[in-house]
Image (cartoon, rainbow, N blue to C red):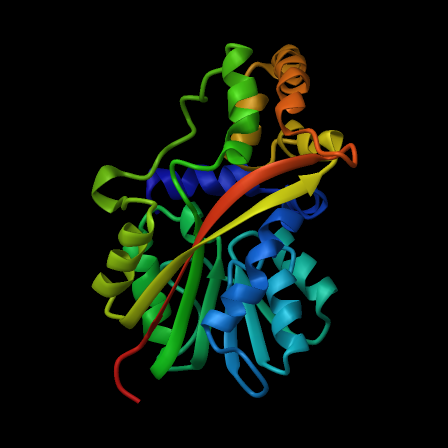
Length: 271
């Protein structure tokens, strides 16, 4: 594992339930488009990589697909097992998954490439387990991100918080531009054909306290930043956050937070 992979394991260990209560609803927004991109329907043999709280798995089962799922964090595995009883859900981490060559008609990964230290190797592994003619579809967060994606980071910066030293970034030799063009190029280098990408933009509507709850609980890298100076730092960031929230206030009293994700799909040659 790279240093980034090690820090990701540390970030997510034991935080599955907090994720399910907070950021999971945001990440579920792209699920229908992701499954459409992979042409998931009745009888499709599909793998949900990085299954998280189970939103992709549940939606694919609802379409009549034959679904299996995997996640590196045991807590996420348990969440998906509870959400979709009867589905084979295993612990497994990219770039080495516990499946045979050519095993699936479709392999999907919702916001998973954001959390791996070797994204190209991860896609090559998804390519390996997809049958010739099968489909791979992935989503990532665009960078630079939309204003709603930057809200909590702005609050942390205004409070004087800095990124913890142990919180690694992707090594430059393994990184790629988090743009439509950069994501397409990555899929093509991984050996996929007929690659296409699109941007998915929406306003995530959520209560201000609910949106704060995830980072305050240490969820994701932003949660580690918010908690980097203990309770005093969290309180300072919360004061800044409360002030900044006025920029995103909607008529119904919730926040309307603009987000942009990138969706790409490709086919394995042959078939």
